[in-house]
Image (cartoon, chains in turn red, green, blue, yellow):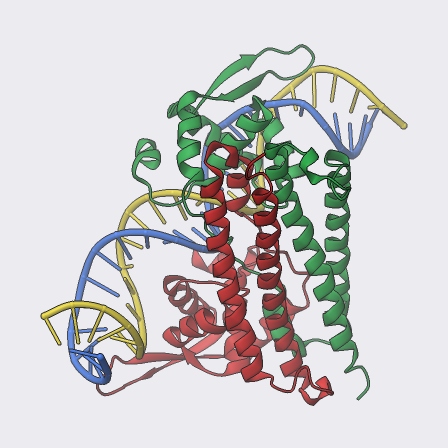
Length: 199
Length: 199
DNA sequence: CGTGCCATGTAAAGCGTTACATGATTCA
DNA sequence: TGAATCATGTAACGCTTTACATGGCACG
């Protein structure tokens, strides 16, 4: 039964809350807009497919955590605009105060490395270079976002940001640090493997 | 049908390969041993519950990627000792050569931060301090492992490690860097939030 | 006498991905 | 003409977690 899900489930259902957060901070949105937002800005710490988002929104509406309004549009499909309700806001506040769980890590590259002696060194190194390029690119995207949204940061007075903006900015910082760290590890790995080139 | 899973599935099924890797590198093991190994040594880049492990082993046995032997023990439950087969080794080698996918990140703390203005500052800071302590502890565990398994590292000649050991070591390095990065981000976050203490 | 380790499993539910579907508009 | 964007959905499947279950042994 769907009903029990939001009532007695003990696990996190964090996607619901992540969506509520966006509705609260960024305002009413359609499912499509939320997917785009997640893709573009939130993906550094949360990813979700459009199917998940639409499903979650429908279920949250049944629980009165959000309400929706049908917006008729000409020359393009109609859309459902979702907004957070008072109840949703209360539930969100409760959730925020709960302890958070770290993301479960399942990093394919690590077992591949551990079994890496099964393939030629060049294959491993090519793969690490590919990963490094990916993470470098993501890092650049995040740095650009930081420049764009928080140009004051890095200057003399970080207090020029509002408290809310600063909190959000810390999320970006986390993404930046994460990607940078990956790029550096790749460098270390390439160096280490390279040293075994011709013994 | 179970059969199709290993034949035409397009997704990664990486747990199977992660298990194969351990069987190949660390030798034949029971499900219980694999769970313990993952908990203690692999959790920095892979986590799996015992239910997953047991099921995966049974399914891999049906595909002849592993074979098992029943070990009768006195004074404790019997166990099934699994070992990788030649076919398993071939499949593993194929998989290693494939491009790897980054772990999907779903970090609860970030949306909580974004909606953090809903709760008192002290609640946020307490949570970040808790996370910092967790990551500090994990970092220490990994550093101890590094000391224990690779005492030579950091000394003059990292080439004293075999190629296989060095590859495995790189996985550890990744975990160390990840945890260290988290500890540092927490420091940054605490500093940033602290600055808003009394405006 | 309770807790924790050893050792394996079933069942159900929740969460996430993949595939499929529709249909108009805009831009190259 | 073909691809991309807007906008939402269903169905099926696969992966992960949670809860429940068993039972002896060792240790304090």
